[in-house]
Image (cartoon, rainbow, N blue to C red; front, side):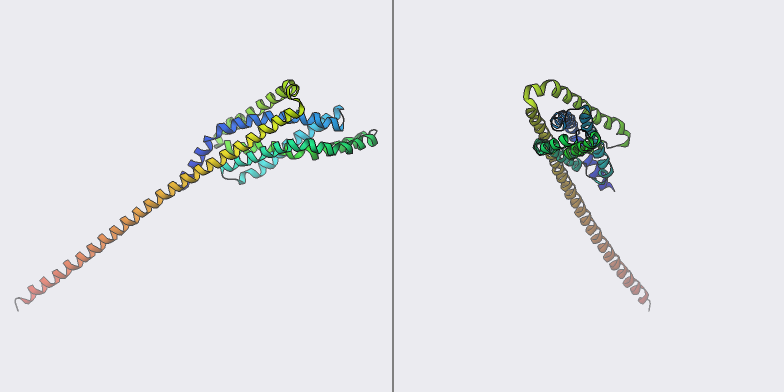
Length: 282
């Protein structure tokens, strides 16, 4: 029981060592998330049309995907017991989001002729075209937005180590992510697109996501190596302690054998003296 408590304490210390890094990464994760939302909305609207309902469909898919990702992660994330593995999973999700940011413009090139056909044939059929727009946006966006939605439960599972800290730690994570999202919307809408253009801004977001992902994965592996070394040191110390205990036990056994031998000798001497005393008077 004591050894298990030591291991858990070591893991908690290691997780706490990268907590600040996780908070910084999650701030920039929120920033890139809103940059993607603005850019992808503008890109997709050019394909499916710029009517208000088209923007509403995109936002519906985006927010629904975030909720779905959070739900899926919340149902499965408690199965993972190693805190540092959660950081590694978060880093992989960020890499997937960044990679999809590069792929989406290519996918839109393939969708453009298809939606041109739908628009020309189904323009008069509002509900049918809206449904096809919803399906197309879901196909295009569900993968990255599900990954985005999954990041909050994963990091909450890592960052919240005590139930008494649930409100403050979860609120800190969500607050920083939301502030980052607001900063991303402000920077992208007012400056970045004007300075870098849509594709330049997209490249910046992809680079930020890649950095977040790689830093998180490397921090996770580095923390794991530290824990492995600490565990090996503890194991060596335990083995040394066990060897010392065995040596002490052997010494005790040797002492016990010596005591029994001495007792037998003393007993034998006592019997002989008694025999001599009894035989003398005869």
